[in-house]
Length: 462
Image (cartoon, helix red, strand yellow):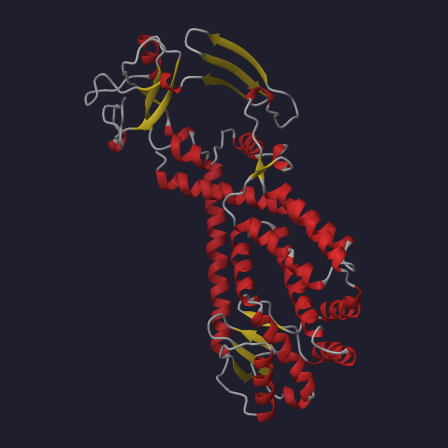
């Protein structure tokens, strides 16, 4: 028997899969736009567009849109793919919760002849609802999530524990650091530490931030160059980049099976550094900007590549990344606000098309299917009752749609022998002369031996 808890976590897994597919489509288009406008969009704009991806991955619900690609490739088509693989029908969140609480379900009957209540139950095998492979996929995904979560926590915890509380005592550095905090209007207490366990200047920590300097950096770099390092790292703090890094790490863990999301957030971290460079350069004159770029090159030559961790925001990077950043610095003045705004508009349209839900047609007959064919339908009309019944068929299903003009015609049915035994839907429909019947709520079913006699939950009639 599928419990309500199972229905909920399988629904969440379904949402993760669907969101991952949508995000993959968005990433492909986003990378294309960024490539075309790479020298026209400003560095800060190029970093901000990644927030669209983060928002799309976090939001549990998005509004429907007429330009959504899900109008052509919507969730029902993804269900059909899963059906083809597993040989079962995969149902989205609300259906999972509503349809899988018990082996036998109560019945609601549309009674076309009278307002008298009738009732029934119908036996259904619970094991048919959730395919074994789908369950297996969920447990594999959950195992991956737990594994990456433990690894992330351990790596960041061990790195933090290595850091010594060795405060910087050089008064020149302390004074320049304090003055720069005042200029940037940063009031938080940020410790300035030196450590032999870091191979590059870096900002560490969410709640107790520390700016880490390699031992002897003041002998390798000039005081002005150390100030450039301070400026870059304090800008990371001011923009809450470590918080964003932790959020993206959580999203990577949730979508660990999707290499496109790994790559996207890798590129986001590069753009994060370039955006910080742009903010720093905006505070410097031309000669200082050249010295800032030289400081980056010297960092790459002096120190090794800092580890990419969620709790760390480092100035340095690989030699190829430093090269790219120096090139971008030389082109920062060429960035156009007009092109940046155009890029934001295009990316906004792409996000609306990929992350928004499908706009459903109120008429099921005109709804398209995955192969682009129109659903075939036949109509049956009961003029006396104001009820229209339509048979619909598609490449992978057959079904019925009932349109009821007067909602008062819908009646709840409870078993005439409630407390003793239940009845089947087909028997109730036949006995009462109803137009149709459909299963409703569940019933008390201890050890799988219930007979539909006792409704589970509230039952309200008339």
